[in-house]
Image (cartoon, rainbow, N blue to C red; front, top):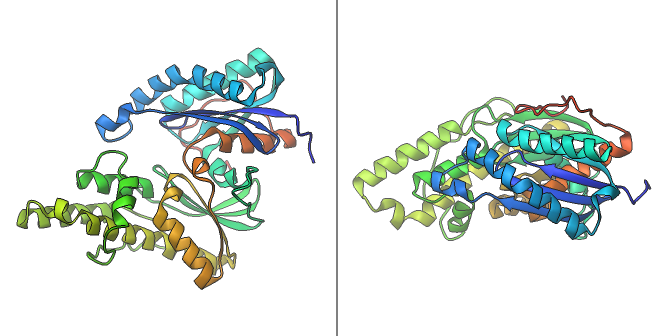
Length: 342
């Protein structure tokens, strides 16, 4: 095994969570996340406010991560950071800080693709989770992304399908907003769905070729449905909240599972790993467990704290790249669009 005393500081700032983690080999010593509350009043992430909050949070978050790991910054072997994809203003804060600190400490700098990190979070050493073996299929589902990826090795990934418009997390949050639920509404849909009838209302599933996704049409059909029913009964939403949430969630999960099943049939790979914030949804977790029993799949779901945006997942990629000697230099710039494998 590689030298286990290599300490990696990881920094994640792709959206609205400022996070720093310290890893020693594949073990997480600290994983600190500062969540920005300001966006709730706007019903979604405001990029300018997000970047300002990152500037306020990054120094104390890094300080806490080092303190919790009980190490001094001079013990660090390298600094890993999220280069992209994400909001440019947010990425710039993390990128600039990582570059400056690496330069000051004279240690290597490692760029990380945020989407690869969601997939490789499965390889964090944690007794509550096991890692898949290669090859496996990864489905990354979050507020900004929906992808199915064939993973043949740590850095050999092929995107087989992705969303053509909105991401699945966005579909959850915007549907919740239509129902008058506060941001972020995805977890609330999941909560109310447990109490409702998933077959109460039927929404059309988009017809999209191959393994690609589309959620914009579904959102529109939910909007028209709610407007139509509310005209007949102004209290329709409040009186039927549980059933509406259950039906919306059922439709979204059907879309995800149908595409995943197509990917399994195309590749013959039955190891399925999910990641991203929507991986915390109890409905998708339940559907994957059903697939294990009924379809013979082997499914892998990361620990909750490694599903949402966090620096530990950036650190595990940084560590793997560190052992490969895959470093970047001070000319590196943040990339709002950053495809897997590029």
